Image (cartoon, rainbow, N blue to C red; front, side, top):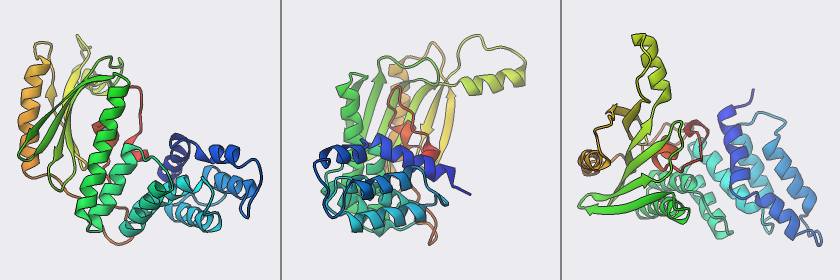
Length: 294
């Protein structure tokens, strides 16, 4: 039996990280070295269409075998990223951190989600300064992406406990849209947290079933997210301005920054406690990376 969460996640990693397997095919088409197109092709096939249980152990073993066999091919960038994520799901923080380092050294550009996984691995393995650096790069890259596409109005406010970023999206999508988000990043060690304002069609549907009444207007809620849990703070009504909501969100997040969550150690062999709400915490309009598939 395959493990859908990991199989989908790894397929996504191969595609979304730039499909460097195919790039490698093109750049090395002029001739084969000791490790050529056939080996790279077999690796790509083994990752995207596994013939055995698609477990973290399988992906780690397969990726590391390719890295050992083909250390000079461009595809090892993706192989290291896949191996790192597999090590995260196997609970091996040191191995995950080493593979993320090797991926970057080989030229990979990690997505913010991978950077945060790297941060968690570094936290668990005791390298707090590099964990903070990876976390801050994840947030910086996310903000840079929003700014480059003019997707949101951005501002930052520094406090003694850390920085709170204000993100007001310019053209939110109609369904499950996020219109505003405030992200708290600790000054020292710790994981980020966010409060977002979003539409809630599913909650509206369940409320209609319970009450027997159709909603008069689309339901909009405020929700607080940490890497461990999600808490619905309440409905957002039309008379609430974003400035008013920002003041409330800032107060709650300043309280969080006084005692931020840290990476929790898990039992040996269990997955590292990665940031499950990250794809919504670092929301990008029009892009969905389901937390369960990260």
